Length: 129
Image (cartoon, rainbow, N blue to C red; front, side):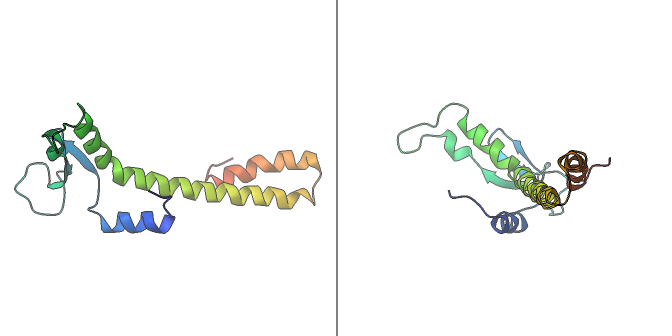
């Protein structure tokens, strides 16, 4: 898989069943109980099923624990995608702060830059002084 763009990640999240998801039966990814879709299941409804990986496939078995690990990774996908978008937002703010610092270097003495830089970085990160 190639590197994903922000737009691709946003489209994937927008088109997918809303999270959070969880793993039940060790290999089935489910929506949470409070899902708005009506279902006869107690937990929600299945989003992905890794059970086929537990049986023989093409004469070979999947390594022990791999179907459950794959289901766990799938269940984390909505949260991982949201975390990726948040990290990109944070990176953009830091880049902007660094540019502000670089822009100020031509107008301010080096000592003043040292005082100015932490405040710019805190502002970029949404932190209070």
